[in-house]
Image (cartoon, rainbow, N blue to C red):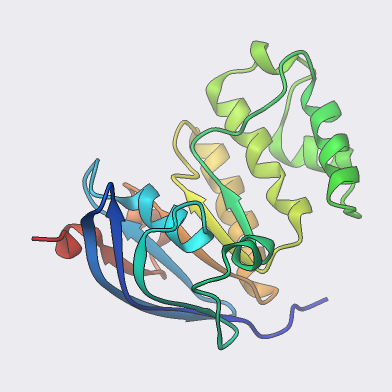
Length: 207
């Protein structure tokens, strides 16, 4: 089932940390089926930008619109409409990937089949602490299939993934876009998402 047409617009966005502007004059718009890659050197503010859009950081100027509605002053609604994947998956130690995915399935009221996700991502029957960083990354990415969010904000989703893991992510991401979703992705490897729009935040550092 295709998702309804959606959009997000970032207009004249400036982001501040401790009262100091870090990023300035960021503008882009996306509609269903589109994705943008946010790139730039370490420390430039890629994660900060995602956190501002999502509503984790409140200090900014500009406007954030979703489906034409200005939600700049409503971070809770922005979070409700967005699926976020950060650097840390926050996985519960002592549980296996299957147990974690079954918990998420109930939490998100998802109709996803847990065993199918285990098979798709090639996840082991080990407890989380005995999984490699790449396997832990795969577990976290499996959550995207259950969140039922049209807008994805993904922070370095392919870091620590091997070639097969990256191919699995690209397959999942392509399906998300084809079904009417959109995504904002930070990455040091923008070429792996060749069809994406690209913004280099190095050009938006505040003077």
